[in-house]
Length: 462
Image (tube, rainbow, N blue to C red):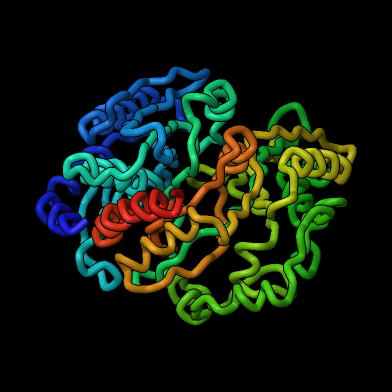
């Protein structure tokens, strides 16, 4: 591995140029208007895996967007690492809040990123982090330093629930057979405080529709006499939390695991500045479930949040109407042991039950997935920890994440494999938000660290 740092240094500009070309393609899976771009991105990934050294690469058709599969098998007696990532991205809206166009990547230097950060939709989530693995493979194959077998499974529907991947995995168990799954779609505490994600929350995502009168009505002629769907919807949403910000859906907490005092004390050892947290978000105070710290609220406790709400007239000026319909998109982040389908049904039953008879309610489930906790006492975690120790000079801190990668639980169920989450992003990278970015240092550090995971895992496996 003596050649690793020099290889990265010599190829730095090309590594950045290739990522920038990938980021220019608006692969928004949630919007059918971008279908051609999503497929173009799949082709980009396929070509990149071929150039990086995969002996076999193919486009795997699914009911939705294709999955790109690649492999480099050097010896069937050696362990196999399956790399998972996604090439689709979140919508860039609201566009007017971006400082630069979301699909015209630029590199800007900041106090946090003196070497620069790449600003573009998908820079961190997940194109930049996925592409680190492609470039790590390139180094290992080009220099003869690949110590084991590797497979790639890169999908195009992660941002909309991975429905096609759920279809694909059970049908391709032999193709995907592996000894460990490696993912970089998470983050770390700070550039000088490496961490490994050991837990993910699950997800239930629904859309609700409230219907009142059969058409928009004049608010003067009908106001006060007919139920206003927007008023009703906001009251119903407000009732979903009590005065302690505890979710009021009956049965919601039935399967929630309460961590012990010792486990919570270990979590509290992770470096965290509440003042810096508030300053970064420009807020005067934090807010959440009573009895839990900020880091506990966003990692080990379930949540319910409105992600979008609309209805009536929202254009310029005034239009005095009582809208016929009102809508909201609602997500629930779930902790391990909570079944997302059960929670979705509990939400549906409760939301319908609290609606007044003056309106009709429709609840449409979109997607979801289970939470996941990865053990820290297996060789894969040890291999990852040693990799960070080598490149960062520090032992990484195990940390649970508030985010969701719903497919991880399915991997364990269908492929009987554990997943290691080696993320290199930061909380400040603004994923899913305007001005998403990924540090140049983080991108290159990922390429430097990943090969050591392969080396360590192969040694420990033997």
